[in-house]
Image 1: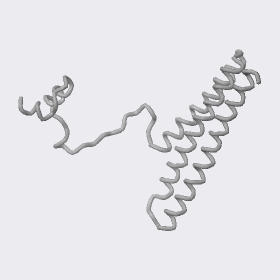
Image 2 (image 1 turned 90 degrees about the vertical axis):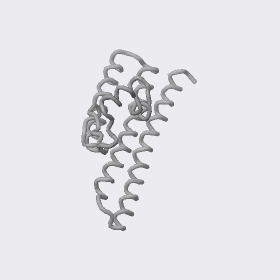
Image 3 (image 1 turned 45 degrees about the horizontal axis):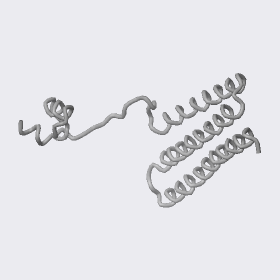
Image 4 (image 1 turned 180 degrees about the horizontal axis):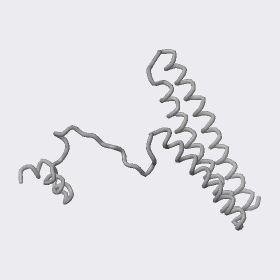
Length: 141
């Protein structure tokens, strides 16, 4: 068996894993949503969409990995690399869109972290933490 054949088979296996992840994850998300719906839990639809979106994201990552393995390792011609770039660009756009659907924010946006006021460090405590002094030791300074 030639090197290109092995790489092609590995790429196909990774693609198959991506499809299996999507199909299995969708089925599991559907069953979980049906059980939650039968129990009359709240927010079933939103949680179903989040689980389905996470499943699709993972499957897309595997599909992109399969394309990369096949394109770059097996036949690294300029045309195949350009096609790969287009595929990765489209799938990246889909991943970003799904991320916004799941979390409600872009991947590069920070989460808003809220903490009780008694847990928020003062400026002096933050300075101590930055140089490696623990919060309790800082309060005694």
